[in-house]
Image (cartoon, rainbow, N blue to C red; front, top):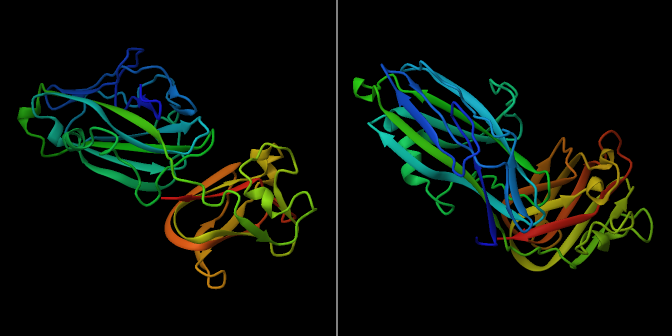
Length: 340
């Protein structure tokens, strides 16, 4: 097994669950209706510190019977990263089988978001997301066959950096009204795999020159946010209680920037209520003219990450509201800036 990556296979659109070593999704039609079944491997596959899991507990996303042309359904699944190495996640089909011509008449729309659970049978806990695939089952099966061709949100690539980060995927299917009689007594099957591959992009902020607003004390100055560690106790952080709370890092030269990761108070072992709730990230070529590239509001995570496509020598993290229910002090255990 390639030790730079790990794979997770998740069942989608099926009628039964199992513990076999493959994942399959099968539709069949009888008198313009179809049903499906699937097998599902164990909850997680892991190599090193890269691991993915989901919340379906070996269950099937869909249970369909008597489906007629025009019928539709939806379901969500939450995929969680349980590693500690920065990775990029995509998903694709592991197998596709056909008996007849059903595949081209089964529409499939996949969206990626931040809320929703498998346990909710109607996916009503889904809030909003970004559509990352729209087409037919057969179109997905022929075009998305491996990691390189896999599906991901190009505008906000999921690059998890810490245990517990997750995305939710919403699947909508529709049997086209135009499905002809030739689709009767036919079937189509597919499997999906989520794969995480380690991302070797460097942390451009590591041990770079950092400045900022006045520190809470001499042991919690700006350098602690770019020293590469976050588990050294309460003094392994930058803390500031100034009116304007910010951290600025000089990357040394103009750099292509692909993402940020912020390890807040909870990542360092403090109360999660101290995690920075609202913040902005800006970049600058000269430390004078700034362009805001991230506006985060309502953060509750111990570790937050953002995908961008920008350039700059200087990066500034500014607190808008420093804690979950107070604006007393901003606590940053590590501020990571990733290249492309």
